[in-house]
Amino acid sequence: MRVVESTAPARQGVENATLRSLAAPIALTLAVQTLVALAVYSAPVMAPVAGPRDLGVPASWVGYFIAIAYMGSMMGSVAAGGLVARYGPVRISQAGLTSCLIGLCLSASSSSLCVVALGAFFVGLGYGPTTPASSQILVRATPPHLISITFSLKQTGVPLGGAIAGALVPTLILLFGWRWSAVAIGVACVGLALAIQPMRKRYDIGLNTTARISLRSAFAPLGFVFRDRRIGEMAIASFVYGGVQVTLVTYLVTFLTESFAMTLVLAGFVMAVSQVASVIGRVLWGYVADRAINRRVMLGLLGLGMGVAALTTLTASPAWPLPLLFFFAAMFGATAVGWNGVFLAEVARLAPPGQASQATGGCMFFTFLGVVVSPPIFSQALSLGYSYAAAFAIFGVPALLVGAWLLLVKRTATQ
Image (cartoon, rainbow, N blue to C red; front, side, top):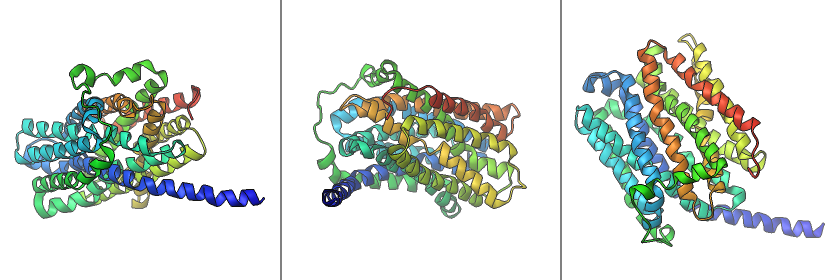
């Protein structure tokens, strides 16, 4: 008994020391993820004002903006492996934040749809490489038994950015207009890029100055997806889940303002609730995946959850009481936006040693591909006369199927 009593405090001390050592890399990667997500997710909040009034297009066309942004993200993601190896994860994060500034300023500077589209591409180009760069930082610092919760904490930056967009951007628009609001978000991005410069000494180490940066080498990370069946399955799941996630974030505000006749401020608040719920979900799912069930099972359950939530939109109506609407938004957000941390932790675990950023970049290519194709499909469904609810439900079916597949088809060494 004395041995147990004497070693338990020691183990607890090691655990506490490990958590303290993780505070800096989590804070760094979380801050970057939040700002680039805010840069992307501010567009759906601005769409009901910017589209019909200044750009002369329906608010639902924001789906094309998001699709173009994630085309940039695809390019940035697959190129990230070589870039991170040569320049370091912090430097590439700084470049991504600066690209978001350029994109937001371009989109805010003109009423030309071509210029707005170019701005969307630059925003996405900045968003794409930050996730592989963050993975490289975290995988070096995190012990295996904490990897899911660590990645989930970092990935809360995505819904945090969405929550800030929903809660803050409507007020900014009322005060300054959507154009200056976009510029302000871009300035915040470059401010963070400058603030993290001192972190380069700690994390931009062991660089390979001869790392190849070419079109061929940029797409080399895709090899991980095709060579390793388990990584390939993660890519397939992320393709489907990414589509459900982006449709929720892109169209929730427009759905509520057009179908429920809500004000922009109230609709933005509902979006913020969904994103806060996804923050809680990401942390909770990561903790459960580390402590109770393996990550593949958790991803399967989340697929079932987001599928059911998407299909539930078919029952939604303006007659719903506000608490029920908030509850629905929270459940949808916790599942459809809550899966990423567990997914990235599993990809990092499956990757060969020292190649987490490359494997992540290869998988994220397919995640972003799902995000690219989904908004235009959603918009096309609307143009064919489908309701927003029906369009959401269309994306719920493949999520249900993938969730069931992950649960029923077992793979070895998934924990």
